Length: 209
Image (cartoon, rainbow, N blue to C red; front, top):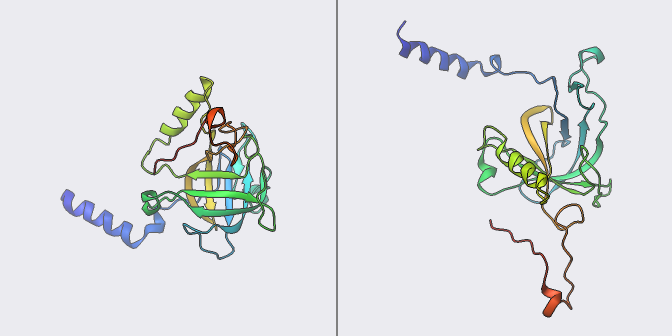
């Protein structure tokens, strides 16, 4: 059969039966983040309150989203199990098939709740970076790691698997959101009276978007 017809037949089969080639996500060596929206739509703004759990059985142990030894149920949410406010983040990246997310860990009534996720220092603001244009998923992670190794703060990161409402989204990078904090960008907060002289010296956070 000519190659043209072979490829044409292959694309036709994939188009008609996409689920034949889909993989069912069951487990990973990486921590697994599970988000349940309760039927809500995650959009750019505002954040919506949803449930989030993290499965992390520790180094060298398998993390199960569907555990065959437990009726295909997930392992317990043993790193975090609670409420988050979540939204899509980014500008042009929101149009990619694999979307990035920003979220805040919150109390049941919606107040910010500082927690430690996967061993990172306590805070409430976090990012799930899709890294769609970097197929290696390594550029940001490696750069930030080298900076921290040299003693200069950069966002801490952890690779994770992401599932939203039972839909496997792929490997993401859980990251600290850049903000003023003793464990992040450790600079003083300016007060209204700090408007001249030495009071204006120090560090600043600039965003170029």
